[in-house]
Length: 422
Image (cartoon, rainbow, N blue to C red; front, side, top):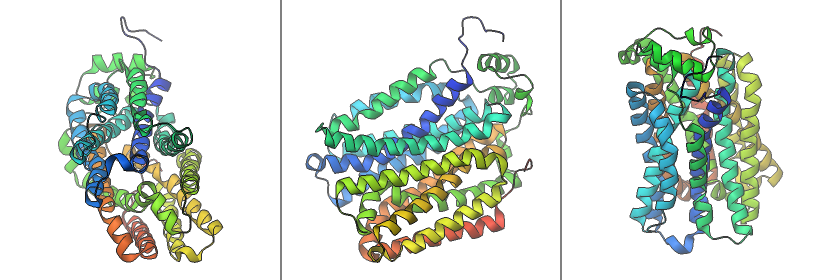
């Protein structure tokens, strides 16, 4: 393979690790938020309203970051933001300890969300556009797998922090280490081959291709340039509308498990820190197992059947959980695990599906819009769950989640597209 002078090669494995790090960091930071407030209750002493606002700050930042950074990356390129965001996260992880007021922590959580939410569509586009066609689906599946590993890592690190008697600041500073590792891994990353080609910068695209070790034939799969206006073509608008509903129907129920897991699980029959963390780790593990299973399932099955089966199973699982404390701990564990397993399989399509439906010129923008739309659902849940839980109870909340999943099933039955190669 030819070597470009004065520029180190950037292997496909390194690209895969550095891109999936975005999902790992998102999963870790989002899940760790609840544990930080749990471990540092005496420090913060926030009112219920203040706690709710601080909790939604990350989601609000993610909404703006996904939309804004995706657009910037489509116009100006992926590489610069891809290289710099991890260093910003590392610095922010230290700066958050300057002040513990509600306003200070709202700002820090917002900036975390802005950076990490913006990094996600860029990392996804980088991995999609610079992977051989034969490996693209498998690599994109790893993005969701990495998210669940990050969520599990947050719960395990919180548990170890408590058991080791370490200060809560130790746990809250872990994203600094993640950011530094990612910053080093992404150092000198080349620009996306397909983005350069879409802009007519063929010579630079060839340099990036050689540095990434992509075969010339593989780099031809999207050579046709297109304009940002392509987003408004009827077929792309239709796909964008469907995927927006698809992501929201995914995001709302699962957010309750990921962000309010200890409260929900406690209402279903457990009531101590060790048991709650254990159940959360088990549930997150089944999310992970489902996403790993999808590595084998997604490349070999059409998209529509996978979406329909998983939405249906998730709806039934949540509905069967609704009796609450009437159920035995084993049944609760079983139903949560079935839900998590199904969600894990379906969730990898969040990365694979858009890459198959949108062209290079609008992919990052489309991913940013979709990420922002899903975060609207998360934002609503973050604000609304405490009030719904207090006013309606756990049974009604679970039935609402089941209804949302069933709505996703119906919409998918009617409108889910099947990529042409399937």
